[in-house]
Length: 436
Figure 1 (tube, rainbow, N blue to C red):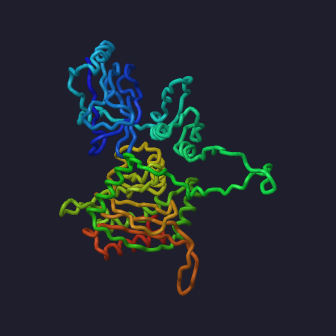
Figure 2 (cartoon, one colour; figure 1 turned 90 degrees about the vertical axis):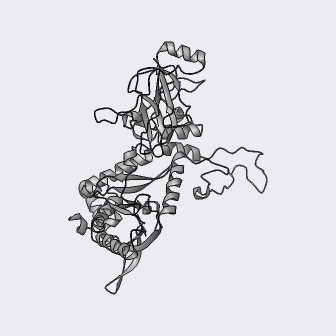
């Protein structure tokens, strides 16, 4: 009996998803819970397992196509139904209602898997060529290669165990193509043909990353655009700027790293410095629901991650209850997962306050946009050596720019200054928050 499997809502408010790659071709056999297809949602790339065992009679869409939640994703049946469907030019009729994921705790929901094992995939078959060896690459890397006509079997991966990374593909895309020689080099007294002509190198900084023309935005970029427009339209922003002496903060980061043999991300220390401010001023760890201010008991801190696909915010759940080393580990894990597009929806939503380390890309002061559903965001710039005055003496110290944007419907300027003062105090002397 042929059965339709319709695209379920695999995230909060998901309305559609793009088919990245089919893992089981039409006419092939699929086992129950076997990885069936890779889908890209607004933020994540996930694998959808098959809810049934049988023959894949029909795909609900082609790779690169967008389908809506509730639409037929795949039709699965037995071999005899495959023949009937082929003759009819369509899938066999559905005789059984759609299998819906159960909402009860005892049932296993039909959702995707983004485990490490699922990221190692067999390479797609390339026509008119020898059989491909196994290729290790994430779905988003495969899509990037496919969009630029790059055969992954010809790429030497620089990642762990030969995994092909996004950087490998981007390097191939950016590599200059050999220029065609239209005419031989002139010879004579003016030019010595035995000496290569002098070439003025073109700085990579001035090379356009996008060629002229019209370029449809990616699904992630469209999501970012919609979120930014919503926040800017709905939230009356105010931004407070300050500079802070980061001498002690950087010393503590180095000391912790040396003691424990791990790199301590700056974001982990900044989050620790911010938590006391959120506890003292819960308006900054809140959301506005109409005329009601909802203050949150848990401090779920979003960290802005610069990825090749655009800005993403990964969320550290209940950051206030975590120790420094646990926080550092979470920042590293979420950052790597965001760049690889392997995080789940729950790890990319639900922040109650956001920290953006714009200093990681050389930034200073800025005007960060408050994410919708929250009331504030703190941007941390790059610490640079500057002269500052202590007790009438001029000293040189690493000065870190801070930019705090907040919702003026909830937070007034005086409260913004008090929050910022507490954060500055903690950054200038980390012992104040590390002892807590």
